[in-house]
Amino acid sequence: MQAESDSDLIARAREEPEAFGLLYERYVDKIYNYIYYRTGNHHDAEDLTARTFYRALNHISRYVDRGAPFSAWLYRIAHNLVANWHRDRCRRQIIPLEDLIVGRLKREEPASLAEEKEEQDLLLQTVRRLPPERQQLIVLKFVEQMSNAEIGKVMGRTEGAIKSLYHRTLVALRKELVK
Amino acid sequence: MKKERMAEALAFHAEGLIGQRDDAEAVTLADDEHTRLAPLFELAGRLKQSMQPVKPSATFVRTLGEELVERARRRIALTKRVRRGLLISAAALGSVLSVASVVGAIALVITRNRARAQARAMHASTG
Image (cartoon, rainbow over all chains, first blue to last red):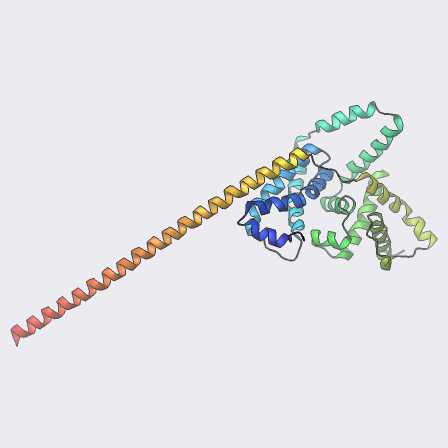
């Protein structure tokens, strides 16, 4: 049996609550992943994922299909919420408890494993210092494993523009890492 | 090496990393071009390795799903109540207007008849 299309579920969601539940199940992992890699911790990822879907629910009756996939609309909501989160975080300088605990655990691990994780953490932290749209591209490419055409639809750009952005992003990221 | 060519080569490499390579878009690089792009290829590989999908906790997913469906249920019920209320109000207003127009029409007929009767009486008394 073929899964119901997003358009059909969106139309049903205006009258049937379970239809929104199905949309949620379809995209919660993707949105969570996106937010996790933009924020770096599970606590904020859960909070912002919840806010994304509550906001989507509040506005679903006004959603208009303009040719972009429904996921693009969800990613846009998530992207804006993460941008606000970053702005608020800069003001408050909060260190997630996870970072403190992980930092402590690392000191108890074998040296090689700890070094590998440290490099990985440094890479991910550096990604999170990139401009928001470059972070978005990296996450959609390597976590969601989207093609350039799919990323283009989510970000509202042509495939060529995405390739160009990807090139510039790698160059900028490398520059940050070798500083 | 032109930027467009570099972008194409990097894009093709990335598509390969995520299993979406289209060989029709392959870019054949000269040795010096490959050497120049090697650090970026290596960086892309590290990104792929470091950014594995994570799973949200099952409890979180289930709880949030239940809350959202419940919220959706309340919103839809509220919208239906508001719609029903508006329909009833519109129907009531329609009824009132209908009755008012019938009463108005009757009043008009009565008034006209009276006016005609008075005119005839006056005409009879003067004629």
